[in-house]
Image 1 (spheres, rainbow, N blue to C red):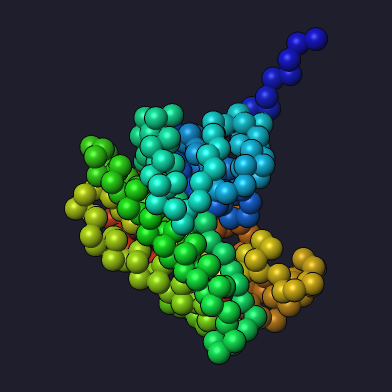
Image 2: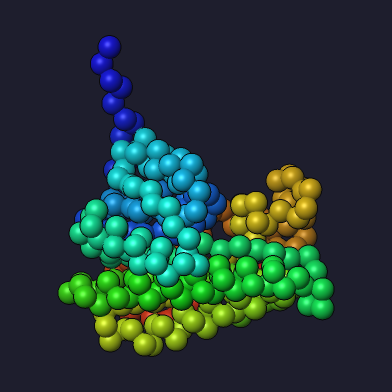
Length: 266
């Protein structure tokens, strides 16, 4: 019996990323997975990275089912050697690193500052801040060697530089650091041909925005009161902002922190 052909991916809505190589960390689920799918849909070859091989393989399978090109690489963004090896493998496989999305992050919340466990604080610092720093270092090192340079988008949060809530001090501090680090890196490396920007999502359609024991339906009811927009953002809406900042459409956008939160921090 003949082998079934993969379902063709629909023709790209644009050719912005044809012949481009894109690296996405934290791509096994949520925003990272949707971002990877969106880049592949516009013609990019995508490297999906994270700590869990099974979820990364699912992302690759989704991309390939639609006719796209992707490979999975397991890596821990808190380990410099892992991140350097991730970039090296990306270049070995596809020949360049044109876009990097530093999306890997963790949330630990629910306690006031005085009660925040040190272990949770250090975990968020390691993943959310050091992970982005190590990503930037390895990615810029490669991009500055390329005549074409590159674009980097860090995933921050509306919680941090833009808004605060009770019981999330550690997360807020680390995401404020990501926003500041993005601006600093943008100034440091635009002369190298590397554009660095950030997207700061608010509540989106992922598990991170659910309160303990809350269902999707319960969240939808809550957001009608809590969000000026009246709902969470879809992961596709977050991905659209990422792709814009990574594209030539944003060629003069440097050091921006694009908030996508339905007006919550307006």
